[in-house]
Image 1: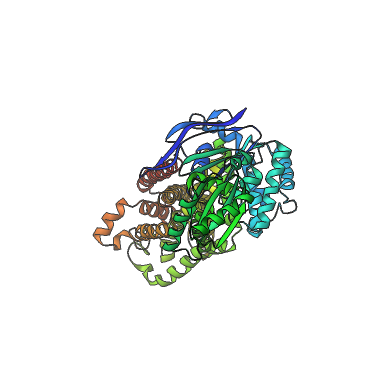
Image 2 (image 1 turned 120 degrees about the vertical axis):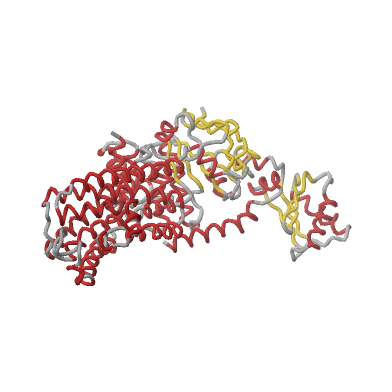
Length: 340
Length: 259
């Protein structure tokens, strides 16, 4: 049974920016569903339409049995939401933060008290209930943030980039909590991420989104299998200049069309070659290239990752975009915090 | 029902956050005291001027100026109320709240009520200090309560307006600029520091369009003159209208922000 269902869901921002461009998908009850894509792909906009914070320009979305535009208040009662920014109140204790949300969800005092105890245990914050949030570490705040979306035992939880900006250790522990949550409460989770590893480890099913459109959808294995074999990455140059581009173009033309090659995709300074079997393909590639006078500097083989899937469908890597845009956003966010 | 309880919880959250900031408590108590003491010292010799001492309004600049401090504080305490909302927006607290079933307008009303409660506590404190310094309360406790009603209307109006401004401007720098640009003239273009009799003609005309002046005139009547019903009724109507204008602007901006 599906708990989220969208039909041609679209959001156009002023200036004709099609942030989300007619997407269709279903999320089944009890599964972890991930939206994977680079920054600016439309992930947050989608989440904000599903949790009623913004209205779709066109199309429909049903969440937990109710239409997000026709019945937003019924949807709100049944969902939990954790945004990318940690939306906790620093000038209050952890318990006060959680209790306030308990009241918003119309729980009575006794239930709130009991749930607070339960949830603090679940997210590993027992003992810190009555400390001011301003004394919490970044990881603790994120866990409290997660907890605030759980107090009413929602049917669906929306997690927008749950581990962006966290250190690897904290990230691992947040993953642990999310897995526990699914196991112990049987909740449905809709998460967005630009970390392939996160989607790979947590999600039952993944939709890869780019420029407002879903470009591939399936289980992590299905997606990787769609590549149809292994990925051999060849680099004929050391410096990424125009000469390098020319080399890659020539390399591509030599290899494409060969019987053991299923596809090629050039990226920045490298060429991804999709082959049926990597082990036997490498010697053939080396031979072919050297006979054409192309000197290979590095060559490597890997089982396909979600990044390869993304590359195959978009011609770009998530990683390459992550580098420039995320850091800028993070710097900006840090700067804002410092000003306060 | 949900509207009232949600508003109450948000008011409580705001009040708690303020009480926990020692700087806030110090500033909000110290500032009015500073004004009261400094201004009455600086302008002490004005005590004999027409419209201040010797005439209808008491016998000293203190008796003339203390009601003005009440209004000044209600103005400044409320006109900066939107900065809390701005903080909630920047921190992602507002979005997170709006994804819950919380009654939408409670989020803004709760903040406005909290800021006005703080203003009233400060007002009570100023009254006590004024009396200690020698101010004679001409209409006693009932008059003071009436003054509090007028101050509340002024405060609620400005607090709602400021919250609306925060939702409209979204940036701290512009918000600070605009708020200063508005509050300073509102204070000076009134009879807060000088009685109408000593003000130039153009200023006496301009102040008729300033809600702050209506509060000044009537609070001063109540504390230092007596029940001047003509002034009181007029002020009540003007301040009630200002309250409506501020609230409509605030909720309108809030609606636009939350679609």
